[in-house]
Image (tube, rainbow, N blue to C red):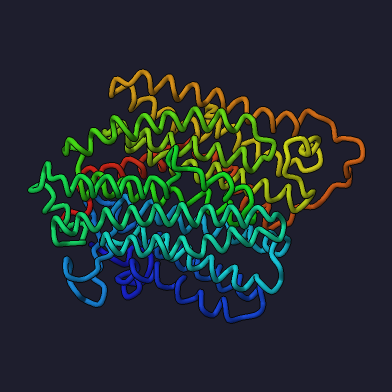
Length: 508
């Protein structure tokens, strides 16, 4: 594969490993320094470097069937560990690193407001480890190595969520809950990988993809796939394995929630696609039946039940957290459809949901730092006090509902189209029901924001939102609208990702 599309060839040749290694290496000096601002600068430099490498990989994999293979330590696969990038994970890496850069711009004033001064350096160090782990999950071509990177990303995430305890002690129990459920998910995943290794004698995904067709109907392989699906489903917050998510999103620091909502479940969703379509195949009856009779019904149940739960929340962050569970259902429904159009729609919603929830949670961070509000009734009159922030939140909410000319409408349109091609009218009905429920729970916030007057006794002073919060917030809000009108770039990205999955991007 041609390198040096964007960066010098000497750097581009090592882009897959440098994207993962640089944030991990920089986490050490970020932790050693006492200055939170200097540690933020190191974290930001690491995220920007990762974004540059992600752009390089994205450009290098744009051609049909383009695959980049990088053998660590020059040990050739399947013996050595391989990093492998195609159109599927290149799109995810671009999303992950761009989200990290935007979230870090937002982080400087937000973290100074929410995190104790003596913990900020460790906070940014932990974030860099999370970024490295998530990038590793997206990049690796080795099944056991994916488990390692899942744990590298998860362990510091528990600590980051717990740091929200300075504002709300419930962050501690939420972090512990996530730790327990995350450990269960990782255990299921590694047991499944063990079953595959026992059946095939290899851990390299491309090698697994070559050997598994010879073991069609093998019970050990099928059990292995089932364990992997449950483990990754828990990490992706697939209903009813989502119980860790509402607390984690509601009580973590604003920056952590913003970044996790845009990335964490998306990486687990990618891993499910990678195993289901590259390592295994929908041509395998067990895999297809798992999608049709397990994933699709759970996805539909999550879309409707989580949306209904969001209706009864008084805390806006918990409302959006339950909404995120519903949105995971939309993505999983795309997989459950089991066609290339369905996977393309699922990936498209993955990309769009990152923009939607990034804007919404970032706006909530702006409201929190300016007025300290979290509950719906406290949002009364803030539309007049903070018009730009409120407009950005409104853009994200309209996109979440799926109003035309927003990115949310685009992905729901393609998802409905894929369901109709499959003949799944019931799935279309479920999408429409969940969208109507989204109208009601978003209305509860928007009517307080724009229509209700500021209550007596509340602060009427206009508070200034820091520019480092406002800038990335406006960018994300505009992306929700611009790509809702000019959707071709993200649609092409999703279609290329789905084509890479169905064409077995890990195969030699």
